[in-house]
Length: 203
View 1 (cartoon, rainbow, N blue to C red):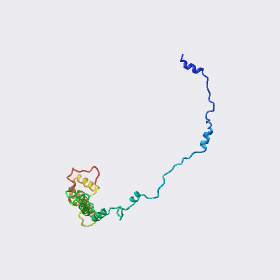
View 2: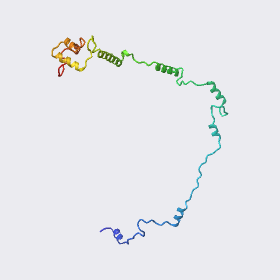
View 3: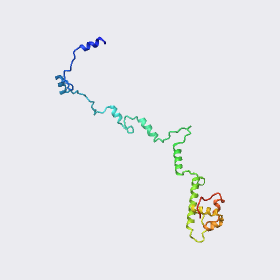
View 4: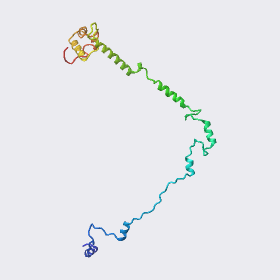
């Protein structure tokens, strides 16, 4: 079985390598000489020129100075025009504001900032009311031990709880206000009995 080509390959003589694996081929004498004496190519790099040509001289001239390269008529016209005011939108038919108008508007807006009046600002109104209540509460606290004080109007949570417990027991508003040294009408502000009630505890 099999092709005749495979049979011919079996009958051919086997060839072995003539050098050991890992060893390199010894270089020839021409290769050794080329390695020992490298050839340097001479390259000509461009060198800087120290002489000025006309293009360099023209480029180095100050256009604002007196020079023969600047047209005298052109320089004279520039002097007659003077300093130009920056106004890029100037046009007889333009509806845009001029530069001076914009600057004056900006200065006037910076000088007097426009805020809404404090009476129509709800945040400022709340802060003002809070400040007034804080002042009244501090004044009331200072008058607590003074004889002739009218009584308390600002209550803490324990006092409110005691009022509710006493009212639940059936005590009158006047008796509660007298016992807890409250201003007349403070108990009535909590609403009629039954709307607010304490969860537990006693006065």
